[in-house]
Picture (cartoon, rainbow over the protein chains, first blue to last red):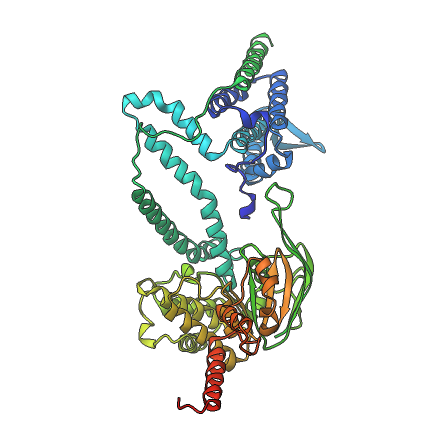
Length: 267
Length: 291
């Protein structure tokens, strides 16, 4: 169960996407999301899908990983698809001479929505698979830095985010350990009614909260004892820089974006 | 209850760059009523191995038989298995969650679906085994000291009356007095309840004192298996695996090297003390001196 959580997991290999600057990747991701919603005809959808496929291949992350990342949201995709098929007004689908409540328009819309959702998840995972959490928060901090002048605590926000991201795997591990320990004492998390299952979570959640507080306290003490002070005067071991790969990527992306807009206007 | 492990393999995160072959072709037979110490370096596979024994992990390949139950088969009754095999994890006090010690210890028996009277009897018995007086019963487990919390957690497993008790580093992080107490209690429990006990540790001293048989794990395989005296006579092999012999064995070896004739199979402080005292007494007798 916990093994299926792949979103937000870094995949430590080398690829052109791994070498890109996090700022480029974040900005291009935002543009790509816009592009997914800009596509409004078959040619547009094909182009966006092919471009996403190219990103997947360029990242050199096994395609299996991307599909595993889709598993947790499969339910959402199916749920929206079903709603679309049944609730969109239009020509009714006839099956064996019977009129069903499903419509052709709904079917098409369901397909489009499902495709958009899948593409969204895949491109977002492409960012987290190819960017380590530390570099990612560095990138976000740099991107937000212009807002610091307006009083936005960018450094603190970035620090909070890095800490949160840093502790996700730790807490997953901890949850796994506690679940196992309670299972060893006969706990049953997988069967029974919804109410019983929710009740069965208490023996897991209480120790998890206690340990999260303990860790937070230990971390605060450790930072304090090393004289931690936030703020702009801190320097980094590895500064992030734009390199040629970023310019190439941006150029390719702008071409793709222009093509998409042309398709939208022409067709 | 006897344990039979055949051709056990376990691979973590198969097919990802984090893939790790944690157990490689492990074959073991542990007899009913044995007290076995499992030692090994961090990452040697000892924790992975014991988690297989009550079905928390399913092997990539191989079979495990506990008593007459094959637990690696599909559809094996995990609930029944977990009553037979009690597993105390590392730092078990981190899993306490109830308002009172009594309630926390009764969590296991309650999950077994026992009657209130039976639960009550078992909780009292378990508290008694770990040396917690009944006056603690209605106190919150979070008010206790580290060593006491750990005893509550161990009692929580004992209350299920397992036939096989597995403990993962039960003495880790305790002060010497707490350590001593826990180990003595486990030993006493073993003698009284005639359970099969598996005791995972990387402290040679603890294992040397408690176990009748030692299994040394290294890089996912069983490297050595035998009586403590046999294991600790292979100091070189142990050192190459990042382990060591107990300090007292090192002292005895050093004394032997300097020409003092001592038995090489001494690995506990008590035995060493007795032997050295006897030797000194003999020496003084021979030289005709008063002690």
